[in-house]
Amino acid sequence: MSFIVALAVAAASTCTIPSSEEAAQRGLPYAAFDSRGGPFGWRALAAAGCTDSAVAILARYAETNRSGLAPAERREIAFHIGQALAMAGREQEAIAPLEQALDSEAPAEWATYVRATLAFLRRDGPALQAARASYAALAPFVGPSRYLNYLDQDDLGDRVLAAAYGPNIKRLQSIKAKFDPENVFHFNVNIPPKA
Image 1: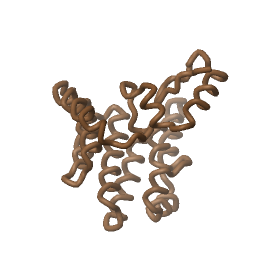
Image 2 (image 1 turned 30 degrees about the vertical axis):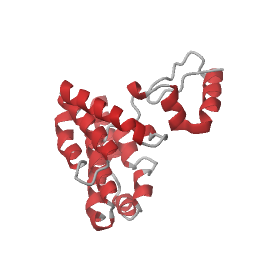
Image 3 (image 1 turned 180 degrees about the vertical axis):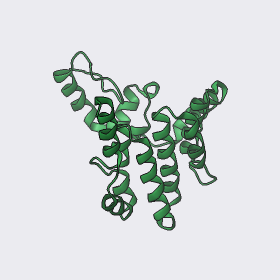
Image 4 (image 1 turned 90 degrees about the horizontal axis):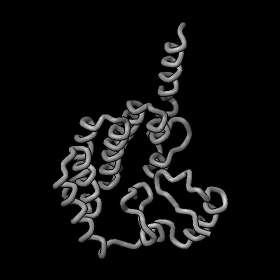
């Protein structure tokens, strides 16, 4: 067996969700399912390059629990499916599930975020600008807190970091200054080092 074939076999086996694990996940409350760690949580699968497995577990969870999910949870699962596909470079496939994340009950902030994501994937500059303008108009009416997984690099600033991390921001910045003063680890939601 060649090295490349062995790698392909190993990658495929890490993407296979054991049936007992899948059954256990489908029985979880949504918050526990969504935050599931370990090698078979949908986020871990997506991060490992197992996009199809991540999408499958999300879709099967949604189907199994359809009647018990709140509308916001159904929207979020659809968004996560689109997110996993988009992050894997499968942008055209991501559009349909992201469109499913929009409905008449979606809060304005959520709808704006999803529309911005769709505009980005479609490379639609005017729609992206419209979404940014809409979000700016909403900003005074939304709470001071932020969901970390919805922050983007252009959202960052002292005010947004303080909203996201609350009273912990100063402590986190001092830790960052001590262990990463050159800000080498600056991806995702960056906390700039401050002494």
